[in-house]
Image 1 (tube, rainbow, N blue to C red):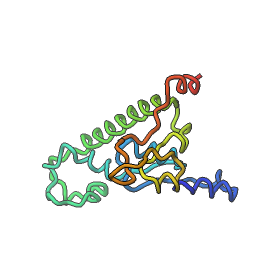
Image 2 (tube, rainbow, N blue to C red):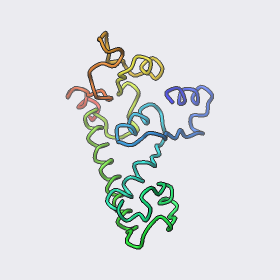
Image 3 (cartoon, rainbow, N blue to C red):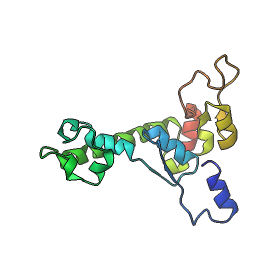
Image 4 (cartoon, rainbow, N blue to C red):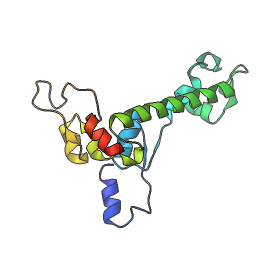
Length: 167
């Protein structure tokens, strides 16, 4: 995806297309990384389905009901006790929690909007990702290979950098 925005811009199509990131996006950091790399929007299904079912697994009529059955509201998989409104509230709470995490991450990077994110706000833990997508590689020689001993995927800017960007 890192090259999609560049290719669209080179062909004069940047304003004509949207880049939708999907697949494996389950936590706020995943969405922020996709947007920093050029996604216009993100889509997540699995996390939402898990939120739908999170506290009502015992109310699915068939223990191994496929997740899409709930999305399509296939009632054969739900018993009469399944509370659709309760499930909808779970998804709302999930999205609200994501929003709070977005705000925290953006503040840590000195940003006020996801639209301000750029690839240089990221760091890559694998050398090949850094080379292909553009973020700085945070690794160095280590006995375990390319993955250094860090867990963050975002560059945390100093207080001076954050204050400069906000003002």
